[in-house]
Length: 462
Image 1: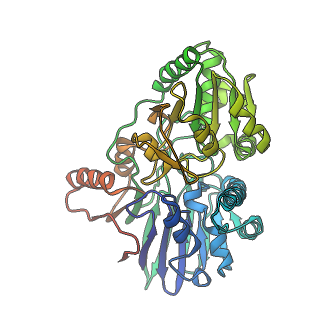
Image 2: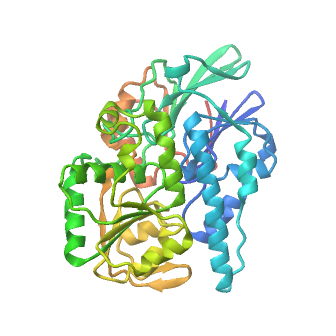
């Protein structure tokens, strides 16, 4: 058995891990690379393997950096099934359609200003992906394995990262010997606001592919977010600020709305207008009540039904015209808009309109990958470039890592401590400083255990 790391190797986007065994090619994730525009377009429009030679895909979850190049895979000749949880299948459809629409709008904007840019896929390409989804329930619900062929079977465990996210457990038989492998996808945190904790796997795991996005950091408790939001919103009221929040439409937006709802009910923050400027976020939020069993008990008790995401001062922005109208509204107000790393979508227009105003606040609530616009803003780069034009960053920039949906160093160590008969670890979905720090800790905790930080394109025999 061979594993080839074709993405999310020493970076946190473009997840693609190819397993080759006895003539069968299994792809774990097929994600979009996010970073410098020219580099991203090149990496995303082509694949590092022949699509028509891939037999099956198992998708860990519906974030774009894990599913975003599935349309390219299908366009290039993939004919197999894409296995994932029912929630992921439903959400990924919206994620991919939104990505296609954003590409279309961004290309139209850039083409008006002298560039010649084409989308890498469109809505028709997305529909062909949707037709290949094969929903598989979590093992805790179905108590059944899924057989890919006579030598490969798998099951899915709840990763607790976003709705529908899964840890993939594989059992592969080669020459009469059984080999086991688990891939975390993106792993969630203990005690998240909405979702259940990550599930532990009872079987032995010989080879463990784990993300370690925050392998060198410890998150502040989620409870800290309440006081931090108090401070941000009170500052906005005092200065009549616009709070611009680049946020993933899936997971982060729902967490923020849920926390704001609780704070408002407890009268810990005053009501200000909150605009969700993402049709995608509205579509995804409507999916959550269908999968309440994936949510934790505290969430279900606090807000029965779908009421967690219904606030009297919350407005969903549907049309582009309504989005543009926000430019003329005076603060205090909050705009939550995709994308989470400010790499595309409506949030770019809000940033370009508001980032030079020192009254305004740019609120970062999640990991910003290297070379993304969000990372540049977070690190204090000024001027920054949006749609080819320079803007000076005069707005206040604040970061709340409490909202991260990724496991931190302690969460990762806790999970690994429950893995039985571990023989080898691969650290993926991480930048080199974070993975190096985490590897050093693992080597002290598990002396003699092989721990690899693969590079893009590197292969290993298992």
